[in-house]
Image 1 (spheres, rainbow, N blue to C red):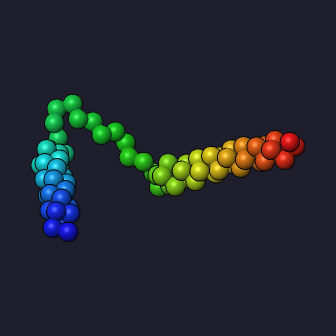
Image 2 (image 1 turned 90 degrees about the vertical axis):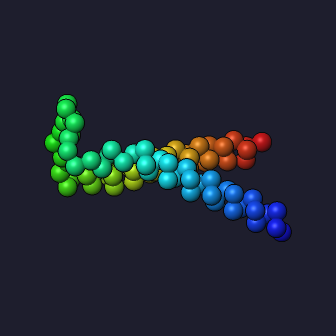
Length: 82
């Protein structure tokens, strides 16, 4: 039991150290001043945001689910014929 606890503690410490390192390395992303050549471009409207982050994933999910259902019906038909 003690060995397992030590492995879990080591694993948790490693993950914590890795996340801390990544956050420290990405800190310039939170800078208040812009760098030369930094052009964020125009923002998205509410409709564009909803389309990109809500509608598109739902449509993609439905297309993939439909393809899986069609594929499974074809394979059921194939196996039931034999």
